[in-house]
Length: 280
Image 1 (cartoon, rainbow, N blue to C red):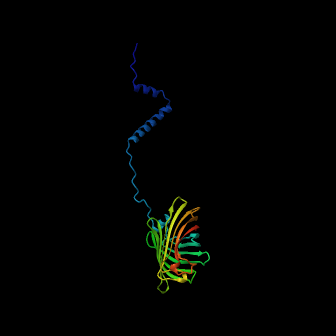
Image 2 (cartoon, rainbow, N blue to C red):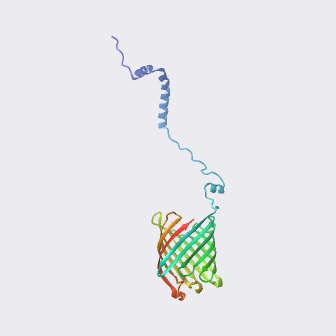
Image 3 (cartoon, rainbow, N blue to C red):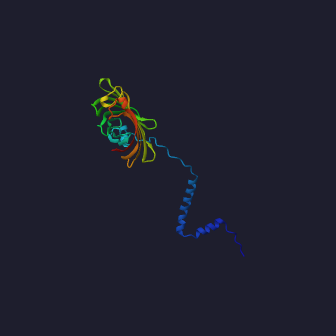
């Protein structure tokens, strides 16, 4: 009786391979090569590609600005009716408007603004300004032009020079000096800001001061600080372009319906107000 040596692993593998069909035998070298490549890729060190030598295309500045849609030479405009309201309180009822419009580029604009009052039982009193607005820094611009007072009393013209911009805490500032006939001077300061309660509900504090170097009884303007108008308005933006509001205002100015001297008729009074803000 002949004893057989135990089959080694290599022997058994060779026998298994020999029993495979010819098609599978042809695929074995490819499978072995794939396994070798996978093993090699596992041990290979990843090398990052070299950074580009020039990340931005080389083109003229004007072409680059046009490509990025930052052309500051394009013209645009807006009409803003900041206040169109009815005030009632302290025995006085008054309609008030405050509007402005501008057109031009980021650097230069033609700016028009007007504001005034229409007391119940008295004539309209207001002013209109036409200014050239030239940007002076990131947040401020210079304004120069003219102002005309109309309504009750004789009309009056002024030359105007001022600044307009944003102070810290996003307070919008308008500060203007005026020079009239016969050496008359005037100054106006207006400050306001928007405090967002929600995305649509906005609280707007506002303060406006007007001062004159001379008394003008015909237009009910007292020398010194002639009038002060402080208001607090809460508006709801139905759309950005349409926002009704209500609020409270404290007004100190000569009573336009009183026959008293200016100083005697200058009193402070509280008024409720209801209005709408529009822009296009």
